[in-house]
Image (cartoon, rainbow, N blue to C red; front, side, top):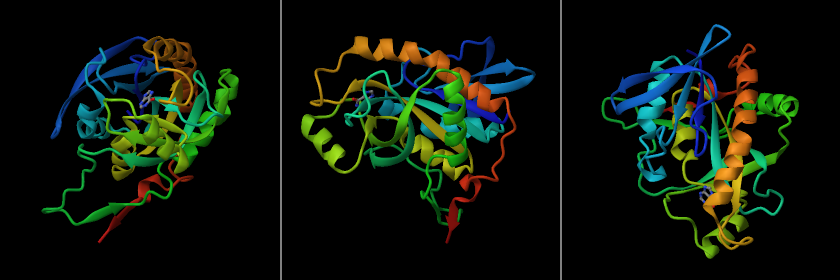
Length: 255
Ligand code: HPA
């Protein structure tokens, strides 16, 4: 199984029949769905669990990513629900994440713990796979998805939303969208040499930007987008993929 989709808030399946599988890793057990499409098995992982029971700061990111590696996964598309602090990107819009700024505080963020292992660092020159990003933007047009542009993702610890002044600061430093889950997920994928891209679904204006944050907006926006985006992911996955056009498998710098 070489390809996987990680569903964020509001995306708990990809609308195809599947069977579930438990994968045991050294970090814990993970439940995934295996979906068979045109004779190929694709892995689906609900980031927060199928009933959205795990909050962002308690997700076992290392177990999730290790489980995908153990299944043989090399290519991952993920969805992320985000607030917008950029007037160009409104609720309902879809963006492609092209960089991040990490404001998480207390989650394990690496597989590289030293000890018997050499000290390793990970190149973040291109955190999100260029190849998968370009391919998504191309097929998105066929699925009537209007990708509004690239977005810099600010990752907060959560689970609280941000204050008005935190958002002013994020905006001033170049952030476009704010979420609570993409770090360390994208980092761990890189540590494992995988290609990873994240598509942002804007569910609300961030605190203080325009109006209040409401749960209703969040759910409506997600259900309107999830099918089209999953279809676009599957369309990219139906073609041959390689790691020749990106640097994802060469990002580890060993001392
Ligand atoms: N802030 C942080 N995370 C989020 C938001 C937000 O406004 N919307 C959806 N996830």
